[in-house]
Image (tube, rainbow, N blue to C red; front, side, top):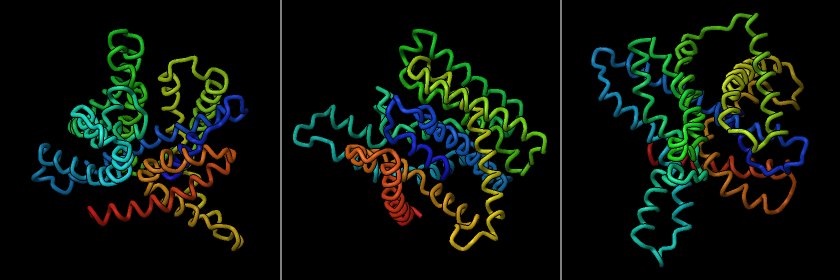
Length: 335
């Protein structure tokens, strides 16, 4: 997750359309797909633990309340502090009307303009909360009958329906950025039990992983570099599914080997454990970094035209400590 938020930040830093690196930089939004996939895995862990802990007295209704409460405790404190302040600070209290007050309430608590008008400020959080809303029902179906895993095909079908069935596209096509991420979220839930049981890939399988990674990455980079804006985005997001999963597998192997490969490295080099600890730390505050970096840090820095890498490094250096402080504050408010 630390790796994912870093490439999302790289994606947000402005880069010229004419740049030779434009296509690759655009691939940073793959971090969102990685987040959704890992979130699906994490939710299955949580749901399974709740079932095993209370196996004798487990009821779907009571577990549903606990599940939603735990998700709200993780998301809402940071959301209300960072996003809430963003909307309240821009509210014109002197000219407020009933409609503007309703809109402010909807924005602060639900970011409802994302659902109404595809306003992309902080869009990832309301999209995540919506997936959390439906996840327990899917997880319970899967827990009771493994055959229900095939339902993951439905959001894949829905992406095509939304794009090309005209009345549906007119109604909900504006939130394509959400619909096209639903399949990988539920795929994360589907694969989570294998992860929880610590199943290992066969050695020969890595050739297949490498093949899917190279084909999907090169195709997506070419599409962004050569055809950006000339194809429905959901098409590329379908390529993101194998790309996100293979990226996670490859990065997991890299981080695992880093932990041992740099044990005998010179003192001036960071150890593998130190590198892993750094990415773990960044991943632990990824929600706060996401909410904070674009609107509060990157936008002012981008106006200074410092160049791509200086802008990114400054954005990262400023966002991380503030995100950590907000994370600590949220844990004080709601342990």
